[in-house]
Image 1 (tube, rainbow, N blue to C red):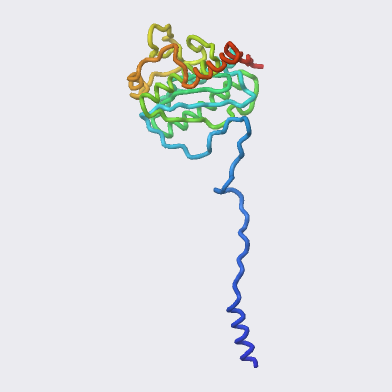
Image 2 (spheres, rainbow, N blue to C red; image 1 turned 60 degrees about the horizontal axis):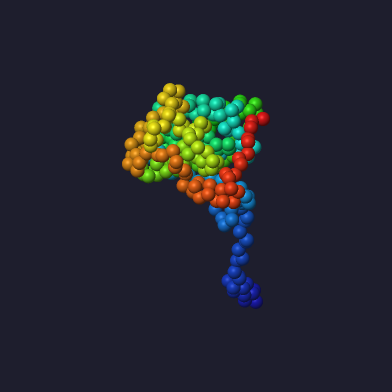
Length: 255
């Protein structure tokens, strides 16, 4: 009787299956729908992914965007401090070739000897400019609203497009602008087509060392004063067709 009961228990145990526990909930990691959700009407931020290695022979187009509370980078109180900070940011391994300062963002074309020099140079640049802006405004706290955006310029045509975009960037935002932008390095640029009055002394930028930035882009022609960033002309025509004149630009002044 005891032996029969023992074997019956073994058979029952063999017929049972162990149930698995539900997976433990965790936070973080790669999953569908993860990350901060975009805010309607707000520009998407720069993705937090590993940046590619920098090639020393390729210039880089960099964009820095300020927080929404700071929209006076071109004001007479702030821009001189920003320009001095940009002029002091170039060193042997990191060089600022061109820049354009708008109300709430800055465009740069830079060179660097290697990936480490590029990252350290841009980190030092963002800190230097942020401190200059805070000193000029008598404030403290964060200046930049996001990580910097960087795009390598891999061909002569890409460099020329970037030059037009940076040096003529004011025309993208203000369709009625003419001449050279005083809040950019256009006054020290030597690649204009035709007779243009430029400045030689006191340049806040340095001469390029890479072939693409110094010589290569000129294969596609010098830059004319009537050129605009791609897409800016269509927006300007649309604005004139709707309103009959360029849209008025808000006057941002430093507090």
